[in-house]
Image (cartoon, rainbow, N blue to C red; front, side, top):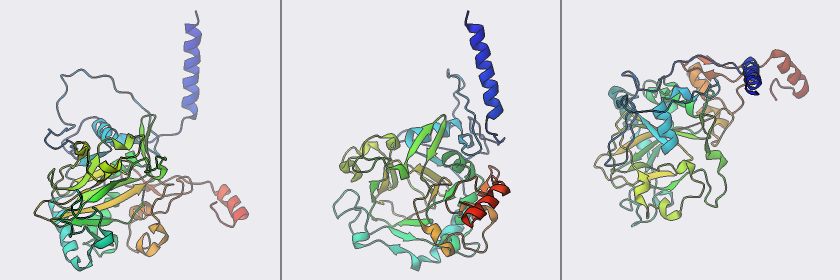
Length: 382
């Protein structure tokens, strides 16, 4: 007897919620299956076949997918169902063929032209421990670093600046850190010569003392992924599984305990560690909430990767944005690039943000509110 009343109440509630629901935007998404024109995503532990979203599973039974309404502020629908599953499961994904062979060749040539600026880590700056340790490499050769790529003249800077607003990457930034995403660290060129040491595993959502590491946190809430700090690495050279370079403890972004030191030093449970294969032009996304590091480089060629970190609009880990000449103070930035280099503040305070299509948009604060704040604080923004 109560069912008709219950149905009416639910219908009225749904109508009321629809009336006050935040406005959403219509965006083009990749859908739940990879198309021939979309980047290919692959994952797989060494020695196992890779998973591809394009694999035919039409003959297999499948549970109905839950449809979740996404707001324009943080929209996971920029990723396919498979990509979202793999990232949430493992803490990382690889997007294939983002950059062409010509783009990679030009970027490497630009680095070669500045090889004298590359700084090798020696002595206390070495990252893999002492000679004989599992991550120490040959015990002598250190990882080498280079910065300043965004400030290089065109065309040498082109690939490195394009990472900020690349049309193939923006949907992932929206999905993983939010529409008003910002670059948080200055880009870093990482180079490992043969024999170079690795990097003791670090990161993770738990500090070593077992306390919550909020500044690196990952969580899932109401169908969406949230990352406080997202790492994005552009492969400039080939990595075969087992060569070394980037590695990650799969699924560790969900661990509720700190990573044991013996795993951090790569002494125990090496089977938990994945060293994904990468081709030049691939882009690796991983959450800093996952325990990750670098294995010593064992291949005959030198490894190169350009590493970036991105964060939500209101979050900051690095402080380079306080030095505008090396951040957003470059005269020849596009409006889109400048938006990504904005310092941390909320989107509703006239923050420029990139749409899924790469246009600069954003919320506007009412003028009468800014006029009031100017009278109160001497500034239009509190």
